[in-house]
Structure formats: C-alpha cells, structure tokens
Image (cartoon, rainbow, N blue to C red; front, side):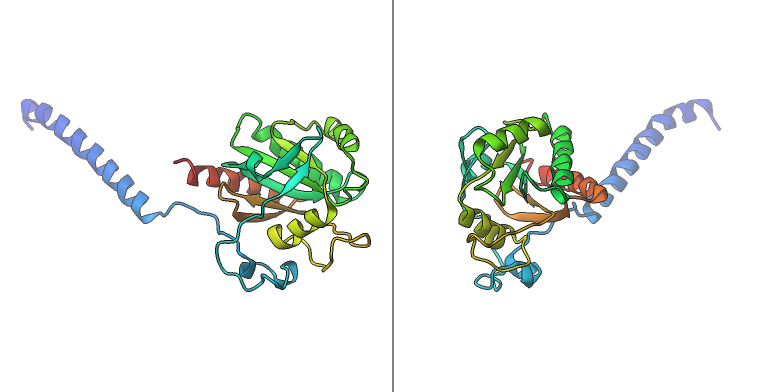
Length: 225
C-alpha cells in the first residue's frame, strides 16, 4: 500500500470510528429508557393499608398538608419540605425493638446525603404525648440528628395517625387515633418533590437501605430539571 495513501486514510478512519461509537451510544440511549420509579396511589397499595374511604383512588394522590412540632419546638409543615425529596417514618422514643434499628438506618442515610440540600427526613412519633419536645431534643442529640435535614416530630395524635393511614399507607390495623389506638410500622416511605409516594422500604433491612439510596438518586435525576 502506498505510504502517502495510508497517511491520508488514517484521519478518515479515525473520524469514521468515532462517528460509529457515537451512533452506537445514541441508539443505545434511545432504546434504553431512563429508569423511573412508580407513583403509588391508594389503589396501588395493599388495601389493608389504605383507609376504605380512599381505597378506590387511582391517581393524583399526594401527602396531605401537615403541622407538627420538631425537636426544637418549631412548627414543621409541608412548606418545610417544598421541592424536597424526603423519607418519612413512624417511631417512638421508648421503643426497644425495631425503632432503634430504623433510627440508626436513617442516621446512615443522613450521612450519605449530608451535603445534599434536596434530600431530607421526617420522623413522626406515634406516642406524641410521651414524646415531648424535650424528650425529642435529647433523642435527636443521642442519634446525631442534623436539625436542618431531619425533623423528629410530635404533635396531635389524631393528625399523625391520619397521616399514617390516609397519606402514607403504612398501617395494617384500623383505628381512630384515640387513646387506645397504637400503630407500629417498620416502613420507610420515599416522597418526591410533588409530595407523591415513590417507594416503600423495610427500615430494618440493610439491603432495602441500599435500594432506597439508589432510588433517591433516581428521583434526583428525574427532578434535575
């Protein structure tokens, strides 16, 4: 082969190779849809977890407005979570079974997203009469809660229990939020910036925590625009 011809052909071959790689990548991207998490509405969840008054709803479910008191005595509402991805759970400070594991796992999640202002956490006490602000403050200090990222809350029991049953769908048993009513759940709930439920996770399971971290990153990519 003529050397001059070969020298002239090399740039052309390089350009063709680069073009081929770009075309393959473009085709792969088009044929591989971006992973998206499901949006959970009442009809998508185990009916035993959903209040019978809303079990038929198939679309547009959002977490209801809320008003709670956090570890600093501040009122926390949905406005504090506006345009945030957050993980919600239900616990009580005197719990000696699943709650310590759940709280420690949220602590680990908090560490992963410590420098990400778009990800927060919201814990609801299911024994709000016992879990006063001072109790929550001591609990938050013990667990390493970062106040700007994680609200550990108390409030009106009926309001909290209604959130659990009609917004987050985490409780199997029926109840009215009265004195004899008590809920206990290991569920973590992933909520997006539109206040939609995007995932459920076992807050005591290490593998589920890894799945939750991955899903938060998927949500962040979905809302990056």
